Image 1 (cartoon, helix red, strand yellow):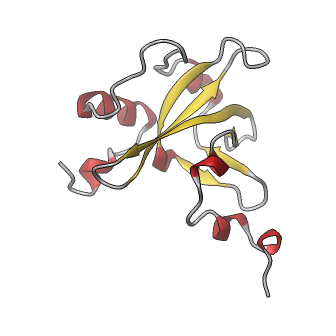
Image 2: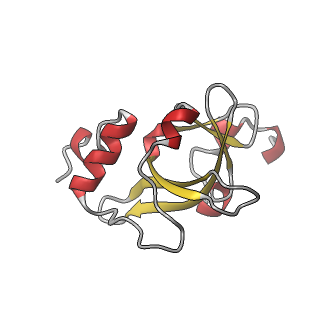
Length: 132
C-alpha cells in the first residue's frame, strides 16, 4: 500500500486543500525565493482557483507587497514542497501590487484581470475557456 509520504508531489497536488497551499514557498526557475502564497482567490461562479496572492519583498514579513498572480502561472515542484513561478525576480519587482491592509483589487473585474494576465503573459482563463 502506498503511503502519502511515498507519493510524488505532482500526484498529491491533483486535488489539495487550500490550507496546504497557503503559506507554501514560491521560487522561480532560477530557484530564487519569490515569497509565499498569502491567499487563494476562487472564481465561485466558474468553480476553480482564479488567482494566488503572492507575498513578496520586505524583511522578516514586514513591508511585503501582495501580488495577484494568475493561477495557471504556477506549477508544483516534483521534488519539494514549493510552487514554481516562471517569473523573473526583476519583473516581479515592477509588477502591479497592493498592500495587505489597503483595498484589494476587485478580482471579479475582467478589465483588471485582463491587465494582470497580460502583464504575466497568460491568456485570461475566462477567454481560453470561452467563459463570459
